[in-house]
Image (tube, rainbow over all chains, first blue to last red; front, side, top):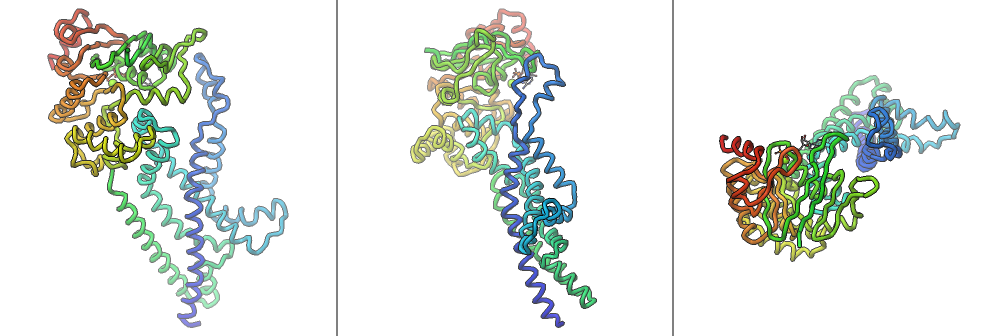
Length: 237
Length: 256
Ligand SMILES: Nc1ncnc2c1ncn2[C@@H]1O[C@H](COP(=O)(O)OP(=O)(O)OP(=O)(O)O)[C@@H](O)[C@H]1O
Ligand SMILES: [Mg+2]
C-alpha cells in the first residue's frame, strides 16, 4: 500500500469523523439547553403542604423536585460512566433487552445517539453554571422594567450565559474532536478505526501517526474558530 | 391623589425575622421623600416591597388608588393582584439600584429602548427619540452606542436613571444611588436627581447623603428597627430631631 492510498483511506475516514463531530454538536448543544431546563425545574408537587410552622426536615421532604432530581440522576450517570460503555449500551442494549434485530444502519444512529446524549449532559451542566452565575440584579432590573419571565430569560439571561460559558464550551468541543475516535468500539469506519485497521494489517505505526496529525490540525481549526467567536463577543464584559 | 400608598406593611423573613413592622407611607404627586436610617433598618426591604421585588407578609400596597396587594381578612396574610394588574402597576414605577444593573450586552441606547418597545409596545422610532432626548438631558449624548462596561460608574448610574425614566413612570425609587460611586462621582448623580426634583418628578430616595436629603427632599423619613421613628420637614428631622434615636443616628453621621 502506498502512502497515497493510505492517506486516501484516512481522508475517507476523516469525512465520517467530521460527520460525527458536526452532528453531535448541532444536536447536543440545543438538547443540552432542554436538559438544563429539566435539571433546573422548580416543579415541586408537595410544596403546597409546607406551612409556616413546618419543621425543617419536612420542609426539605415536601420541597423535593422530581423533574430536577430525575435529570440530575441521568446527568450523573452520563458524566460518571465511560462514554465508550455508553456507546456500547446504546448500540447493543436494545438487542440484549428486547432481542430486537438490529439493522446494519443502526450502528451509526446509535453512535450519534450515544454521543449526543452524553454531550448534552455535559453542555447542560455548563449552561446551568452560566445561568446560575447571572447576578440577581439582572433579574430584578428586568422584573421592575416589566419584562415577562420568558422575555427576561431569552433577552437578558441567555445571551449573557452563552458568552460566559464560551470557554467551557470550547473545552468540550476540543474534547469531542478526540472523542469521535471512540466510534471504533462500534467498528464504525471513521478515521481512527481505519487507522487502526491499516496499522494492524500492515504492521506499521504510520497511519496512527497521520491520524494523530489530523486530530491535531482539526483541533487547531476548532481553537481558531472558537477564539474568533470569543473575540467577537468581547464587546462587553 | 397619592401616587403611592403603603398601609400597615409587615415583612417577616424566614418565619421569624421581622424586618418591617407596621409601616405606613403615602407619597403625593410631585413629592420628594428621602428615607434615612442605620444599616439593617429595613430601608431597602421597604423599597423592594413597594416595587414588588419582595412580597410583603401583610399590608396594603396601591399606586394611583389601584390595589397591588392587600391583607386577607381570614389569614391575615398579604394577597397580590393578578398578573395582568401587577403588570399594569409595574408600569407606574421605576427603580434605580445601588449598583446600576444595566444590561451589559446591550448598548446604552438599547438599554433605554428595549423595555419601552417590548414591554410597553411603543414603536422603535419614538422610543429612540425619547431615549436620545433623555441621554441629552443626562449629558451622555455621545455615549448612545457605547456599552455599559465602557462607562464610568457615574455615567452608568445616569444611564440607569435614564432607563427608568424612559418607561415614563409616575414615581421613581432610588436605593442608595450614590453608594457604589467614588465621592467625586456622587455629585453628578445628585445633580441629576436635583434636576428631576425641580421638574416635579415624584421620588422616594434612600440615601446616606444628609445634606442632599435636607436640600432636595420635601419630607425626610427616619427608619430604625423596621419602624418609621420620625418624619417631617427635612429641616426639622435633620436639623432639629425630636426622637432620641434620630439624634443618635445623626450625631454618628456628623462625626464621620
Ligand atoms: N432576603 C432576606 N432574607 C433574610 N433576611 C433579609 C433578607 N433581606 C434583608 N434581610 C434582613 O433584613 C434586615 C433589613 O435589611 P435591609 O437591606 O432592608 O436594610 P437597609 O436599611 O437597606 O440597610 P443598608 O443601609 O445596609 O442598605 C437586615 O437585618 C437583613 O439582614
Ligand atoms: Mg439597603
